[in-house]
Image (cartoon, rainbow, N blue to C red; front, top):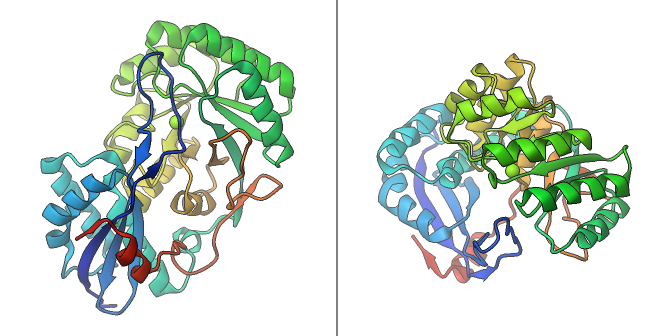
Length: 361
Ligand SMILES: [Mg+2]
């Protein structure tokens, strides 16, 4: 048994930077925060191996690490991830941790474990492939013409599949879906992500158009609070519904989406589903029902999960600008390649973090 211990849990608040994401889907309402302030979490062990993870909304991350997580984790064996996963869920019962923070420590613990094992994370988790097709996941652009220009660039740069984040207006989004299908032809996989813009009535209306245009999936048209609404929506549509991206409760919640026939595909991710441990639980749960668990969100931790499991189709690669800039993880064949170094593959340098951090605990 490896008796390594956690000596400390550090959090470094990185300088503010302009947020390149621009999701504006409901007229008159703000989308993403125009400024992002991320944090890097570092779990320090007595054997000199550090585990890293990234957290968005860094001020909140620093607060929670400082008040709750540090004292809960110091002295524990970082390889005991199931024990610590349950411990963090106990803390969640009191704190109601933000979804995006619930799995941060777990990801850092998997970073440590795979470094101890000397394996890249995806191989430790099972190992299914070392590359996976990526789809271009657009942010919100101004006009149909601009979307078509962006689509041309995505295809020219190697992507073979495109997902729209659009305006959240049924008529405009339906017109965009039709125009894009005409523009790229039938061979390109197209998907649509509503980011919860609609109520039931409008979700049905747009769903019919996406079905006609042979979109591969229809993602999160409504908020995911009401499973029965998704069950009714699925009964009205033929297009596969992709569900449970932002719903709380990890696999406990996903199980009910599946049990009540409220979706055709489920979401899994390290970011919103309890880290690597939660993401893998959902992937295996879905597999038991012959369902795909499509990995949500970019970043290398999610890429490791996508390469560890057979039941995801794609890696989600955000296309955040026009002109299109392809992220370095994706090659000119539209394939995302997972890092082969032991661990998750974060390239954080502790001295650099200490120097750059605007606050640290
Ligand atoms: Mg989504």
